[in-house]
Structure formats: structure tokens, C-alpha cells
Length: 74
Image (cartoon, rainbow, N blue to C red; front, side):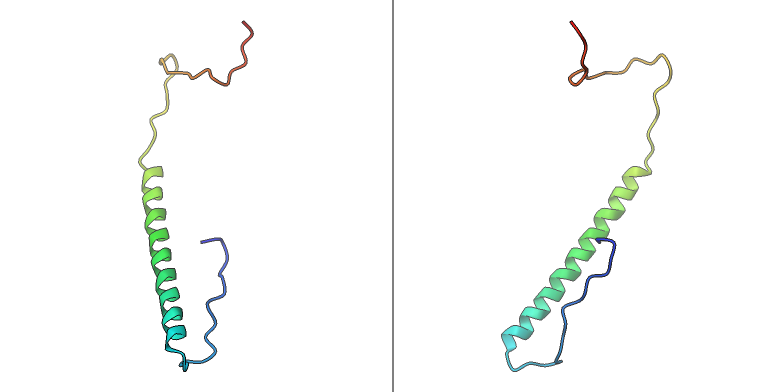
């Protein structure tokens, strides 16, 4: 997601004597997988929007110009 592969949560032991710690690690892995899936879904949606196409303006066509930031001497 950030342009590099982050280090995964290190698992030194396959099993632990503390079941709550093991459950926490599983919960973190599930949350990370869900976040990665959501990120991929949004990436695909944004890619679809960018390829829908934009009709460029034609010369002489009237358009709305917001002059809020234009510095025009009065």
C-alpha cells in the first residue's frame, strides 16, 4: 500500500501458553487482510473512474469560470 513491503507481525512460536495473545495476533492478521482487501477494492473503483473518459472542451464553447482566486484589478 505504501510502496514497500512492511514486515509482518513476527511469530516466534507457533503456539503460545497465553491464548489471549494468540487470539490477538489472529485478530491483527484478519484486520490487516480486511484492510488490504478494502484498499484493493477502492483502487479498482478509482481506476474505473479514471478510464470513464472526459470530454474536453471545444474552442468557442461557453464554460463556467470561477474567478474566486483570480487577481483582477478593479
